[in-house]
Length: 69
Image (cartoon, rainbow, N blue to C red; front, side, top):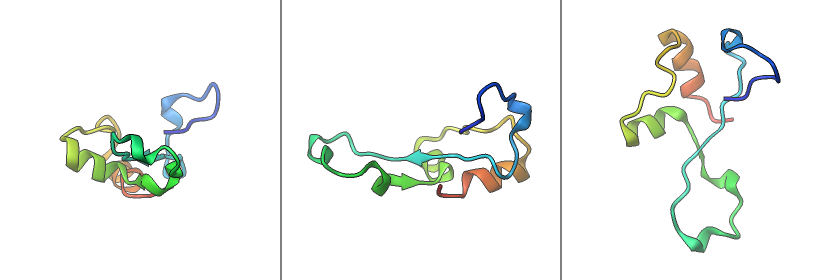
C-alpha cells in the first residue's frame, strides 16, 4: 500500500495504490523484471491464508485487493 508521506491510514480510499508481487524463491529469476510477478493482494491472501486489509471496510478491501497496479 502506497500512502503519501505523512498520510494517515484514515486517508486510504479506492484510489490508494497497492502493489503486490509473488516471486519464486529461485536464483534463476535474477535477471527477470519484478513486474512480471505482479498479482493481486486477493491472490496472495488465497495462497497464504492471511487477510491483509481486514481493518478496512469490506467494500474497500474488494476494490484494493482485486486490482493489479
